Image (cartoon, rainbow, N blue to C red):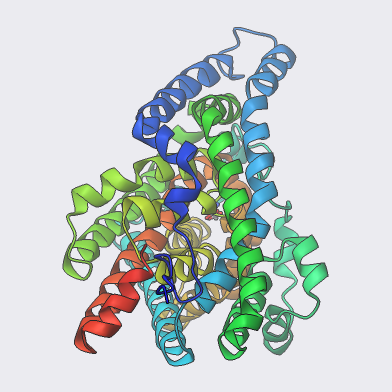
Amino acid sequence: MPATTTPPGDALGQRSLVHQTPQLYGLIRTRLWAQVLIGLVLGIAVGSLLGESEGWLAPLWAERIAAWLALPGHFFLAIIKFVVIPLVLASVVRGVAAGGDVDTLRRLGSRVVLLFLAMTVLAVVLGLGLALWLQPGAGIDAGMPQAALTVGAGPVAPVVGPAVPPAAATEAAPLTERLIAILPQNPFAELAGGDMLQIVIGAGLVGAALLMVPREQARPFFELMGSIQAACMVVVGWVMKIAPLAVFGLLCEISARVGPAAILGLAAYVGTVLLALLVLLLLFLGAVALFGRRSPLRFLQAVREVLLLAFSTSSSAAVMPLSLSTAETKLQVRQAVSRFVVPLGTTINMSGTAIYQGVATLFLAQVYGVEIGLAGMLLIVVTAVGTSIGSPGTPGVGIVILATILEGVGIPAAGVALIIGVDRLLDMCRTAVNVAGDLVTCVIVDRWFGAEAAASGPEAAAGQQAGAG
Ligand code: ASP
């Protein structure tokens, strides 16, 4: 009798994403990152020339031209947005169901969540520390003509995801209600509304349940999820062909709106946030070397495209499909790890946003002369961690979270108006760091997973290695 062979992947015969998306990897091989980088630089240059402060063109014309140039970018985002929800659903169900057994899943899940929490807390504390040390708000007082500080402030229009006005975030519901609201209740409503956290939790439940169902019964659903996943990745591969053009257009539109004057007025604040993000990125690279046992340079090389796209789109949710394939193909992370860590991280892990909350809150406290004691700082940490877990990875979310924190510690929420003009630029940078944080976690958890498998014997190691296939 011929032996039945399980294709590399996992117990249920999961195939590698690499084999499913030849277009995507073909493109990345031909130096997509360089094309994206060129698009980015050209976009900033053309956008700055079109910008209002340059005055070369009538503002109405400049706006129209920028809108047309941005069209491929909005096409790109619309298509990516179209595949994100089914892809998250399918990836988490398959990622969890491929975990092998409930014990492995429990161990992996609790470690990943703890790691994300630790990273977020560390990031807020680091942001607070840097702002305390550098005092970016010391030279600015709230009475300063606001026009000088808000030049270029336009509405922070989300490229992906719903617009949430800062005011909405300040009407905080009691904690008990917010905790209940995180749980999935109506799968159709949540899928239709794009509620990522509920979708990830619900898909995790279904995936875990599949582990308890007889294999033959689980297989059709598991395979359906695999087909959805494969089709979504092919669509991502198609749309990646216009990524450089999309980046050019999006950057053009943003640079035309946020002129250099807005950035100069808040140079100390912008500089402190950028420094904080750089420190966090360096810590991530250190963690890759120390805990992931990989070369930080190689890691950076592997993730450059996805970080450039995160920067250009300001949305970690939008680049989730690419983060997933980067983890699996370029970083060679096991599917059982990547399909769990990336969708979850995109939803609950925002260390770049968290470090920004620390700096921005203290900056505004310094501007308004509000004393923040130790208790206030603790409150900032708790609120920043809690709100960033429940918020989607979409543009401008960070400033909404900030409004909630400001209310909590008694800083006028109107302070948001002071910094909104430069928020888009900072949003782009923190999004790239958020995505880097998810990928760093993938690498670290993958190593723990492999070490554990090796310790529990060659058979387990072989089984888990198959998960990387
Ligand atoms: N845009 C960020 C993200 O998608 C969130 C934020 O506003 O900080 O990760």
